[in-house]
Image (cartoon, rainbow over all chains, first blue to last red):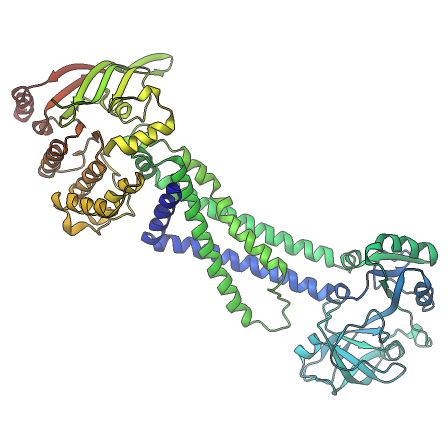
Amino acid sequence: MNNFFLATYLAVKEVIRNKGRFLLVALVIALITLLVLFIAALGEGLANGNRQYVANLDAQLIVFLEKSDYSISSSRLEVNIVKSIRRVNGVADAGPIYTSSTEIVSLTEPLKISMLGVEADKPGLPALLEGRYFRGGEAREAVMDMNVALRSDLKVGDEIEIRSTQGTEDQFYKLKIVGLVEGQSYFFAPTIFLPPAVWEQVRPQSASELNSDTPYPNIIAVKLTDLTQVELMKERLINEVSNIEVADLETTINNIPGYSAQQGTVQTQGVFTLLIGILVIGGFFQIQILQKVPQIGVLKAIGSSNGVVGLSAVIQIIVVTAIGVGIGGGMTYLLSLGFPPTIPLVFNGTRSLIAVALLLLIGPLGGMVSIIYAVRIEPLKALRLG
Amino acid sequence: MNAVALEVRDLVKSFSLDGTVINAVDGVSFQVKSGEFVALVGPSGSGKTTMLSILAALLTPSAGQVLIDGQDLAQMNEKLRVKLRREKIGFTFQSNNLIPYLTARENVEFMLRLNNKLDRSGRVRSDELLARLGLSDRLHNLPAQMSGGQQQRVAIARALIHNPAVVLADEPTASLDTERAYQVVETFAHLVHENDRAGIMVTHDLRMCKFVDRVLQMQDGKLVRVYESKQEIMELVQGIMKH
C-alpha cells in the first residue's frame, strides 16, 4: 500500500510542478479525443441514418424476393405473398413495406424524404407519439417521423405538398400529416409513412409503370410468435412460401447498399486515429523517461523499488490521459452544440462510450514501452556507472 | 569505542573487457566505525567509484564480503538490497542529486516517506536539519531555484534524515566552487560526527580531506595507503595545496 501512495505522490507532484508540459500532452490527447469522438459520432449518425427504420421494426424477419441478395431496392414481391406468410405457423403477423423517395416542396427549403408505404396496425408502422395513424384506403393522409419534424416546422395537422415524377412530368400531391412517430430514417432521409394505395398513387414512377395500379411491396416484415425460433422460422418460411428469401434484421441492415462499406471506412478511420494517438503518447512518454534517466537512477539508488518507479509512471500516464480525454470530451460536447441536425452526429451511442474507453487505454498502451524502460533503468546511473 | 558500521573484506570486482579480465577493485579490506568520516581518494580509474557502488549495494562484488551494520550484502537478494539502501544507507551524488519536482523540504521528507516514517516529529526533524544547514528560507524552493551548494546541503539533509548506518557521498564537491565545497564538506563531516554515522566520501579533490578522520588511497583497484593520523592527512592536503 505504501508503494501505491509513494507512486501516486511522485506522479501527482511531477504533474503539478510541470503543469505546462503535461497540459501540452493532455491537449494533444484532447485533440485526439475530439477527433475520435467525432468519428465515432459520425459513424453512429451515419449508421442511424441508414438503418434506423429497419433496426426499430417490430419484426424479427424480413422477406425478400428470391435472388434479390437481401437488397431492399432490388426486391419486388407479389402482394399475395403477404397472405401466404401470415398463414405460416409461428408467424404472429406480417406487414408489406413499399419504399420510395420524394421531396416535400411546400417548405421554404425543399426536404428530401423517404416515402414508405405500410399497412396500418401491421409490422412496418412504428409506434405513434402524437396524433393518429392514417385511415387507410385512399385518404391522402401521412404519418411523419421525428426527423421530418426536426428539419422543418411541420406539425401534426399541417398539409404538405410533395413532388413526384410520373413518367417524364413532375406532379404535385397534397398530403395531410395526421401523426408523428419516433425518428425512423431510412436511406439517410427522414421518413413519411402512407397507406399502400396512396403510396402507389403518389410515388415517382417510370413511364412503363404508369399503367399499373398494383403496388408491389419491396419487403415484408414478419413478426414471430416465438422470438427464440428465428432460425427455424427462416427455414419454415422458405420451405412453405415460394420465390422468397428470408433474413434477420442484422443481415438486412448489413445489406443496405453502402452500409457495410461506409461503416468499415468510419471504423478504420477511428482505429487509425487511435493508433496515431498511441504512437504520439508513447513517443512523448518515452522522450520524457529518457530525460529522466539520472533522476530515476537516484530514486532507485536511495531505495525506491522498481514497483514504485513503474507504478508512478503508470499513474502519471493515466492521470494525464484522463485529463486529456476529459478536456477532449468537453470540447466535443461544446462543439456538437453548434452543429445543425442535418449533420448526422450521434453522441449517445455505444460507439462513443467504447471510444472513450479506448481513448483511456491509449495512454497506458502508448506508455508501456516507457514504463518498461523506466523499470529497467539501473540505479548505477546515479553514480555515473551502468 | 564505537561499533563497526561498515566492513570490507578482501573485496574484488572484476570486469571482462575484450576477453581480458580487469580487476577494478582488487583485494581491498577496511573498516569504518560509527562517527567516523573517511575519504576514498585516488586518480581516475583507480576504482573508487566502483568501490562506492559496491558499498551502496548497487553492484555485486566478484569476491569478498561487505557488511553494513552487520548484514552481509552477498547474502541478500535484490529486494533486500533495495530495503538496505532505503533504511541503512544515505546518499549524496555528484549531480542530479535531488528530485527536481520536489521542494527542499519534500526531498528530505521523501526518505522518511520511503521508510514509512513520515510523521509530525519527522517533519519537525527535517525542518530542523535544513535550518541547521542554513536553508530555513529555502524549504519551499525547488532544486532549480537553489544554487549548487544549497542543493548539496539539501542532499546531505536527505542522506542523514532517516538515521542510516552509513552515509555515502560521491564527489559531493565536484560542481561547487572552492569556498562552497569547503562549507559543504565541513558541514557534512560535522553532521556525520554529531549523528554518529559512518561517512565515506569519494573525492578527487584532496583539499577536502582536511575535514575527514581517515584517508583511503586507491590506485589500480588496490588500497595502496591509509592516512590515519591528523598530521599525515594535513601533510597530504598541504602537499597538494603547495602544488
